[in-house]
Length: 293
Image (cartoon, rainbow, N blue to C red):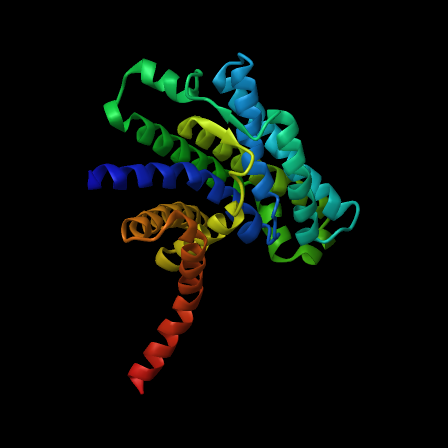
C-alpha cells in the first residue's frame, strides 16, 4: 500500500513536472514573472475535456489544448511588449480573463471524463507495462520534452531567448527583436502548462475550472526545491533539477498528508517548503561560518 502511494506521487510529480518545465522557461530563462499559468493550466484541461466529450480523438484534443495554451501565453506577451503593461500585471490580466473563458469553453464548472476515451484508455488498450503503464508514459514523455527543450535552448533562437532574460538591453543592441523572443518564450511555456493540464484532466478523469488555483506557486516551489537539492550549473542539469524538484515536492506533499495534515493545509505546507528551500543557502552559509569560527 505504501509503495503504491509513493508510486502514485511519482506519477503526479512527472505529469506536473511538464508544467514545472514551463514555469522554469519563464521565471529562470526569460526572467518573466508569468502568472498566466493559473489560467493556462485549466485551459488545457477545459479544451481537452470539451473536445473529448464532443467525440474528438483524445490525442488531437491534447494537441489543440497545447496550441490554445500557446496562444494564451502570446496574449500575455502582447500585453507586455506591445501595450507596455508590466509583466506581472499582464499575466494577472490574462489569468483573470481565462477563468471566464474556461467556463465558456466547458459550459459548466466540471466535466467528468471517466467514461470517455482518453490517452490513458488508449495506452491501456495497448496493454504494456501493467500497472506501471501510466508512469512509463509520463517518464518517456517528460524525458522527450526535456531533451527537446535542452536542444532548443542551445540553438540560435534559444540563445537569443536566454540572452533576453539575462540582459534585454544588450541583446537588443545586437539587433535581436526582444518583443518576439518574449512572446515566443511565453508561448512555449504556456503550451507546456496547457499540455500538463490536459494530461492531468485525462489522468484524474475530470476537468475542473478551479484546478489551476495556486498552480504557479506549485511550479515555483518545484523549481526552487530542484535548484536547492540538485545541481543547475548547465541547462541540461537545470531542466533535470526542476523535474527532480517536482518529484520531491509531490513526495513531500504525500508525506505531509500521511502525517496527519488535512488537504486544506496543503497551501501552508507548500509555503513552508518554499521558505525552507529559499532559506537553505543562507542557513547553510551561516552554519558554515559559525562552525568555522
